[in-house]
Length: 506
Image 1 (cartoon, rainbow, N blue to C red):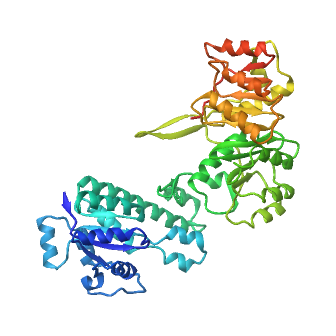
Image 2 (image 1 turned 180 degrees about the vertical axis):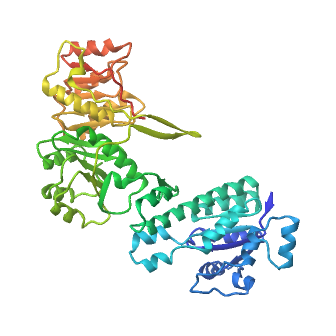
Image 3 (image 1 turned 90 degrees about the horizontal axis):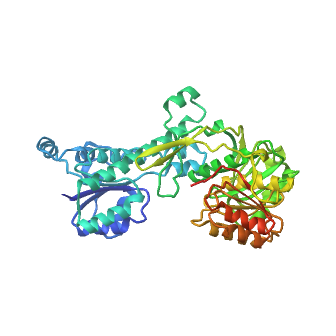
């Protein structure tokens, strides 16, 4: 255990710092600071020593140099052992046990302005150096590298009364180097721009730093070349969650690459609207009708060029991303007026054959689920055979189910997704959800079809569907109780077909 006796604080974001400085003061910790942070600490009624009195140098070069001095970095980097401590004493350098830094908001500045001088001034030099020095010397120094760790530090101070253990310091050091690497990648990406040749970028670039990960407190980097898949026509910077949704959107629309005009709307990777029609406008209208509530803030994707008429209707709702193989000039002009909405022109529907996922302390890889059933592969299990129109809808529904989270049920009528239940722990719940969604948006289920991503071990789902008006069902089959559902269909004049292929999506 090591006691924190001194702290250097230099932060951009002050929110959350109040309790920390009050706690440090109560613990008798000597606090060093400079500039705006010093004034903030003093405003809290807490004694603070100016870095300038320690270094005997004022803040110079418009604040570019404040903490870059041997008396600061000596106190951070000195190992608490005889040789180093003797040198600290010789040169009158105090030990610094805690560093709290929150860097200049470089990424936020890049997102807010194109002014290069403003952006350059938000490249933190002193702060990033303090973070790296303190993290390197984690055996003796505690580093708090961002506002995200203020709460953790406060809990640590309260629980251990100003002491820290090696594990605490090493954890914070790891987070510090995470902050440092993320910050450097963001700066690299800004400078790289169009000035570096592609071969150099590919050999050096470690990935593209994203604004944040799944949530604002998570950092994220994209290792990929999005420009090989899309021309980015406009909009805000693509986020982690945007990428996840875009991937899901491309995967489902790739199934309709050569089909008639088709439009899909996704929310949180699940398709909440999908339709195929004779025109793009009609496909959009039908897709939106599936669930115009979930469409708010969704990901939109089409397999054909977006014309002005369709763009005018799309422009009426709020969405995150719009993807299409092309846009008319008039459509681009209109849609670009809302600068935060991302416009992507897809270059190719082809995606890698392998998919990857991190699990535990490793990564698993598997073949992409590229199986697409055809009418020739369907096996009719019931006395009643589906009509050609029903077969078309069954295959459409099967694709919908394939791309929804399991357990899932998809209801389709006239090549329009009219109800879906997904991510349920019970297939019966998924079925009920799909039926209720369809009713909620005013769809008549009479004559519709149902797809399930896995077999029916009991006839309950088939019974629910039949009572709602469903006339045909597609499922993988394979349960020892398949016959129970088949018997129910035969007793009630329903058609059921078997694919023999399960499309579970966890």
